[in-house]
Image 1: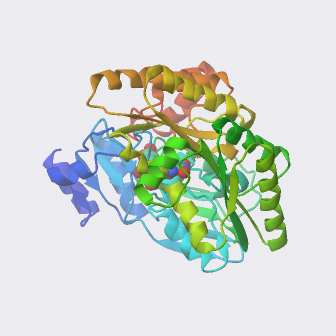
Image 2: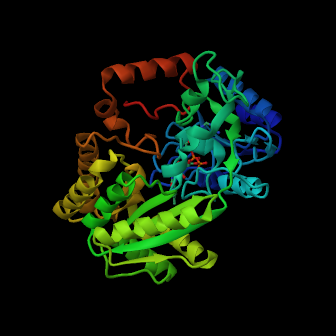
Image 3: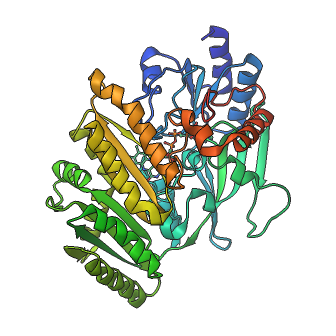
Amino acid sequence: MDETIINQLKSIVPDGVLHSTEDLAVYSYDGTFAEYRPDVVVLPRTTEQVSRVVALAACERIPIVTRGMASGLAAASVPFGGGIALTTTRLNRILEIDEVNRTTWVEAGVVTADLQTEVEKLGLFYPPDPSSIRHSTIGGNIACNAGGPRCLKYGVTGDYVMGLTVVLGDGRILKSGGKLIKDVVGYDLNALFTGSEGTLGVITEALLRLVAKPKYTRTARAEFPSLADASRTVNAILSAGIVPATLELMDETAIACIEEAMHLGLPLDVEAMLLIETDGSDEDAVVREIEAIAKICRETGVRQVKVAQDEAERASLWKARRSVSPSLARKAPNKLGEDITVPRSAIPEAVRRIKDISARYGLPIVVFGHAGDGNLHPNILFDKRDPEQWAKIEPMVGEIFDTALALEGTLSGEHGVGTLKRPYMQRAMGDVSLEMQKRIKQVLDPLDILNPGKVFPA
Ligand SMILES: Cc1cc2nc3c(=O)[nH]c(=O)nc-3n(C[C@H](O)[C@H](O)[C@H](O)COP(=O)(O)OP(=O)(O)OC[C@H]3O[C@@H](n4cnc5c(N)ncnc54)[C@H](O)[C@@H]3O)c2cc1C
């Protein structure tokens, strides 16, 4: 990048401009196998600095790729066109926790787990809990509308966004929302920026809704000899009118990989496991719910339901769930994790069809995910160095997406479109919806400098 631009950036963010080859390499990845180096990395500390950086980029027509902790699974923060990797990790202050209104103002680079820890000290609760909770940011969570295990009962990130500070593509600062429970003045701009994957603006601050921390939880692991039985149990539980906080599915390959990596004593002779948690402020009700769930599991083919007896056992179950993704590396050097969503009633059929794709192509597809939300993470395991395996990936992904769409589902429940799902957007959204979305992008970012080349088909 031109030395003059580097110097201008340094004058805006004196201690936060990186451009050595080593630094650029570090900022060229996200959670996928995609890779491309930015021309420069900028780490601002204030909204005002972000605004000046974006204004400069607009003037010079330089792409800006906003980046939180780059845990994304859609290659959305990989800067394929070079330009500025605008990284929010130094925008990391919790600005306010308002106990009366139950809200918190945070900067976009706050790590989600850190926010949860702070609000829980006050008996409050920020429910969205992506499994990447310790290595993703609030800004990234909003930009992807992140979900997580607890979203079955509590909703996704977008359900907690009450206000935003956003730097637009020309450097202007927009403020939306506020501490209002009801507000119908104008369009809902919070919703517009939520899930926009860095293509409409740079989120620098967020006002988030908090709730009371549930006092009691019960966590159980249900072991199923048959994956099909585990899948249909999800619907049986929800149809009984019980809404657990969590209803997570892991198949046998996921279980085996976690056990090999973590040695948690997981069963290796079952096809699937459900991780189920109930919570609330009435202990008896929480216990009754987990007992009712155990009873349903017994009617649908469970081999054993083990309820965690103490916090250590509960933590171990959660450790297992949060380790699925990293543990898969033991099975194959590469994985492609998809994130389809189907109506809940279609989960058993979706799982069946995914396993059929795996068998036909001869590559493992691990299935786990937030089954209670209808959100499955089929992960294809492969070795990218093997041309024969690599050639199978695109058709396999295509068939996974075809499966989701045929079952009235969609391409992504929480990871977003990024780069990887762009070719399938037209099929998923249809012409009219896609055209309207492109027009929104043109209005907000007419120079196409904000995360260009993402979300929309080329
Ligand atoms: C092991 C693992 C488990 C995961 N589990 C889950 C899960 O359970 N649920 C889930 O939803 N996701 C999950 N993810 C995916 C990922 O963690 C989420 O998408 C997360 O929200 C990304 O946050 P980030 O800070 O890492 O953002 P990044 O990866 O840095 O960026 C993601 C996108 O957001 C944009 N962006 C980031 N910050 C901003 C900002 N301040 N303003 C505007 N745009 C911005 C980027 O441009 C990019 O388009 C998981 C990932 C991994 C690796």
